[in-house]
Image 1 (cartoon, rainbow, N blue to C red):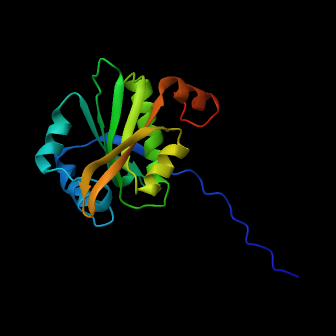
Image 2: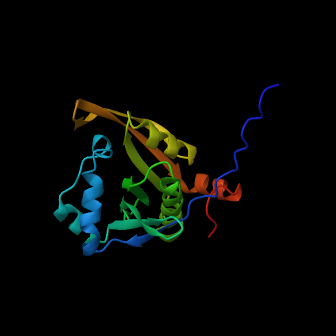
Length: 184
């Protein structure tokens, strides 16, 4: 007789919230960008670029606070917050501790901010095609592939392609009605 497989209890969804980034947070933000686990997937910014993103009204720069203690767990940047086309970009999302559900929880909050608070019609992003973990997250959270920007960025190993994904406001509402998104 085979031993019974261990019973896996489902993990409670991670808890996350976004708070505006302050100047005093930038050392944390820069340390995440320079982390060797993150560098292959992003193009780090200079401190002055982050400072500008904190101040410029078309941007929203957030620290992700997550977990039971809501400690700083990452950051994300939205661009196009004042776009007359209502097309908002998730420019960057970096989470410190991977595999804990913090990225998924933060992305759900970001979608709610994009559609409910900022009135986006379209919420989009690009991701390096070899960043399969992030792309899997975005697709599982309802983002649809629009296309590929071939060899659009230079990485450590040469030129890399970017996958462009998006979600429309109507798709977000359909997901919300199916209890796949945060409520208003």
